[in-house]
Length: 592
Ligand code: NDP
Image 1: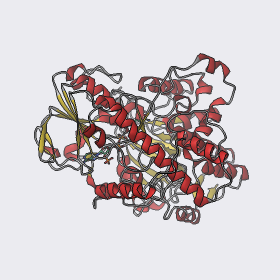
Image 2 (image 1 turned 45 degrees about the vertical axis):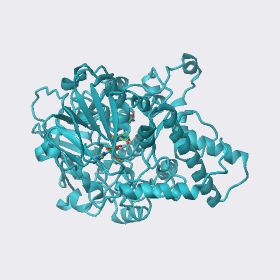
Image 3 (image 1 turned 90 degrees about the vertical axis):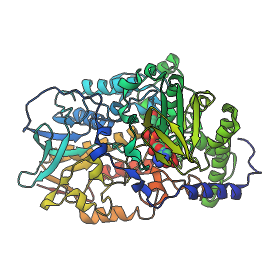
Image 4 (image 1 turned 135 degrees about the vertical axis):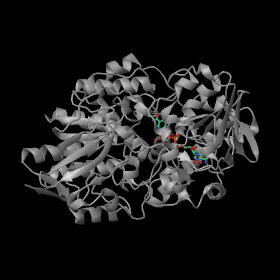
């Protein structure tokens, strides 16, 4: 590691604080426009295919809402346990979840494919690259669905409209826009954490008369090309893209190559570390021993969330900082928590200085380079990785429009206004992300009515209340797969696998014992929720400096927007394993 003894940590903290304050807004997460009413067309599915079928009123053992990675992994694990009567329900026309929707040009696995793509050993598949592109991920999702028979019973192109508990029969009734009333003994919600697109609340947004779309509903009719690029219809177009998060970072290089003129409207720059993608090494594949994927997945989670680990199997920009920490700790003596905190903060600053220096190395214009430098602690925002994004700003057709933390000022009929300057565009692309922290039922688009007629929206009016992030009091036989109040991982499929173990165990046991209802007690929920009070993920990895606003911290306002198990994901997964091994199903009530 570079010598860091001359770092002025106080000065860096002050700079981070000033940049954060510049971006804080009183309206927090309410600054965004909910996509409904006049904006509803931004949700239209450009890929929708509806095969006519009769409405269903049958009964299944398990209904899973969501046919993304959660639905596929939990579904596959249930099938492996002999529970084959599983129905995936999704408004999309195919499986894949986020990978069904996010087909923007350049979409690619951001976490190493060998740990991100689930069930590799079970399906006998090895990804072709360290970070595969979206079509290969979708193909793998289909592979899982085919191998585990999940298509057979699936209801795709089917939007859930209401979910009600039938107390007399102890069954869930799932109603849909296809007039279904499906009955399910168990209901699993696998609807994903970043599911509902959002628009920025920029004055005048409704007046734009050119073509506009959200990145999760890419309009290839207009742009030409496909997820791999080649946007040949943009050659004579002036295009604006609002947002510079992980999505924008992946699609900007393709837009830069294609557009006559591209304006990238930036509020906060992302950290752009090296990608260093490469084809899979056949010799490495030969060397793999059974159980390799679970070991690698666990190692990645340890190396991206602070250990414990003694080696770095993935060895990429996600794991770099913990790798350095391990080197330092191994080189030094035992450290007190305070010393460890100071070391983490110093390493974080060193890393961020390197990332800022990378901008200077790759971007020729000094003013553009300055505007692309992120001033916050690493992991305050989702880190990004790309080997062509920063270079795209050297193209004379591309202009970075820095809003200095304030965001776009105004949108007119044919332009985007920043600092009083009008940037005329034919097409406006919203790379403005997804709702986080808004009501669960608003994001889902329907409510759940549990025992005694109580709705989930009412029970969670003051925030989520769960046991282990999975069980909700008053909602028997209903389980949630997600990170909130559970274990957040940079590698989401790892969390999904661990939830699958837990749910397969609980459902398997309940079926074996002829249990009619499984429900969390209110006491257990209260105790679990109390643990998260005041804890927040994303408050400055390795340092006391507060983070710049973003969806990790409810735009800098709330504690608990992303409340996750404070000791980290691996500790949470161990807790679940011990819970299963104890066999007492503590916190749950089984009713016969
Ligand atoms: P993000 O929420 O990360 O980014 C939204 C962007 O819009 C930010 O740059 C934000 O700026 C900007 N923005 C919002 N409002 C305004 C405004 N009024 N004026 C100007 N800019 C504005 O969304 P993404 O879709 O990029 O990413 C969401 C998540 O999806 C990622 O964090 C990641 O978890 C996941 N993802 C994963 C990928 C993978 O390969 N695995 C690839 C892509 C995404 P500001 O930062 O200032 O708020």
